[in-house]
Each structure stands twice: as C-alpha cells, then as structure tokens.
Length: 364
Image (cartoon, rainbow, N blue to C red; front, side, top):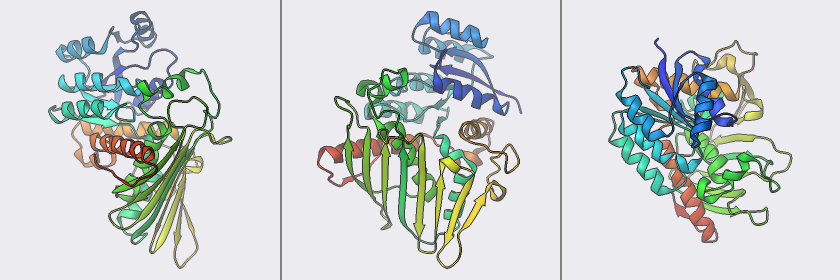
C-alpha cells in the first residue's frame, strides 16, 4: 500500500508529543512525513524541518495553501500543538481538502470546537482525534466483550486517571501551557480527563446523560483544575464515576477502567495493559491476554509487550487504511464526534463544579 504523504503542525525540535506522532506514523510504513510548519518561530521551524529532511513552512496557513496546490502535496496533516492552537490549523487544512489528525482534546474552548466542526462538516476530508488508549488491543477486546453481551446489562462504570507530576509548582515547558487557562482551556479534566471519558465511552458504547462534578485547584494560585471527582448518570440507568488527578503523589500514569454488569465485570489498567480481567458472576475470574485479542491490532507475538507507542501506531495504521478507502475501521478510530463529546464533558464538569456539584446534562 502506498504511504500517505503527511505534514505536521507543531512538534519542532524538543517537542514531546510531536516526536511520539512521528514515531507512530512511520512504525508501519503507512505514512511518509514530507512537510511541516513545526514552530511559530520561523528560524526554529526551518531548523527542525532541516533535521527531519522535510519541506518547511513559516506558518500553517501558507502550508495549507501551498500543499493543496502541489501535485505531490500532503494528503493528511498531524496537529500537535497546545490546545488553543488546534482550531485554526485544523480548519485551514480541512478547507483545503486535507485530512486532519489532531491530538486531544479537540480544542481549548467550545467556540474553537465549533470552528473545527463547521470546517469538518463542509469538507470532503476526514478529521481524526488521537485518543491512543482506545487503540490498545485489550481495550478493543473489552469493547468487543461488552458489545457481544458478555457482561449483561451495564450497571456501574468507573474510570480513573491519576498522575502526580503537577503536585507542586513547576516551570517545565509541558506544565507551563497545561496550567495556563488561555492555552489549555481546562486543567486535569482536559488533559487526562478526556482520555478517561473517551475510554469509558468507547468500551461501554454509552455516553453519560448528566454529571455532577467537584473540580479542585489544590496547588496554591493554580488557575486550572488539578483534581476532579465526577459522578455520572446514564440514560440506561447505569451509574458511573471518573476521578482524575495530577496531584496524586506517587502516581505516574495510572489510567484504569472497571465496568460492572449483571452477568460479569471487566477491569483494565494501563500499567498492565496486555491483561484484561473478566470476572463472571458465577465463576472464577479469567485473565485475557493478547493471545485472545480479536482486533488484529498487534505487531509482535503475545508475551512481547506492546504499549503506549503502539496505541498511537494502531490509530495511524487504521487512519491510513481509512484514507485509502477502508470505511469499516471508522467505528474504532475517534473522530469529530469523540472530540465534541470530550468538549461537552469539559463544559458540563466546569459548569457543575461552579454550581456546587449541580447535575448538568452533557450535550455536545
């Protein structure tokens, strides 16, 4: 299969998530990076592009115009900028007919999210959102088990995402923009809470109808939330909860999901991502591994661990196949609807917390 010609906005020299996306995109040979507007500083952008051996642009608008006009121009672009810089480039490339692969969350504000949505709905190009954890094999297996009725009727859903890296004030580059409401839009609920929200939604196939949230800024003078406790109500009658924190000392990247039904329960943890625990009501728990995975997402034999990078790569592989015409994969790759749902989650949580935990409907 011919590699998809890829561009990138953001992700210049030293950028964490840009490097992750580049590794993921080339892992299966489905993409070739050929152009980029890698920094808002033209000199840094040019230097970063030279290191990668790609065409360099001083800004994304110029890149969208020029690449759309080239016979060998990019077919897709990865947007790996801070949240407030997602909307303008995403809209520009969608209007130019170029597929967009965007890091989560969708945007920093509802207005920016609407700008992306309007551009996506009027474009012939597709929009993808890189919630990488839902592309891990055992998460996809968990989804298949729920869909085939192995758990019975869903009663309880609990998702957690705990980190401790922001337990104190820090001047790191990653912390600087994530704790700035103008650039991030939200704190922990946007940065990691949207992952927990999307993971629970992806596995259960259900979206909560309403929520009650208690958001806290535990580090003095921090302008965004760094801890959130959120109760969920589903239209089906199920109840749920999300706890996300970036001040949980000792926690590195503690993402987990538990789903309880009338017939069985399942549990998955990122720290042991290749194992899924299925606990029937009337029998012993079973530990499922990648040997039982039905999603064909793996690259190595069971017992040869895959993880964070492979989750991103699974998305890029599926996105390439979708671009080449395989629409059967659309239901397992997050897109505009997942992004709008995440933004609705952020807005509802912020509104609820401001109203002392009032129950708020979640409406995209």
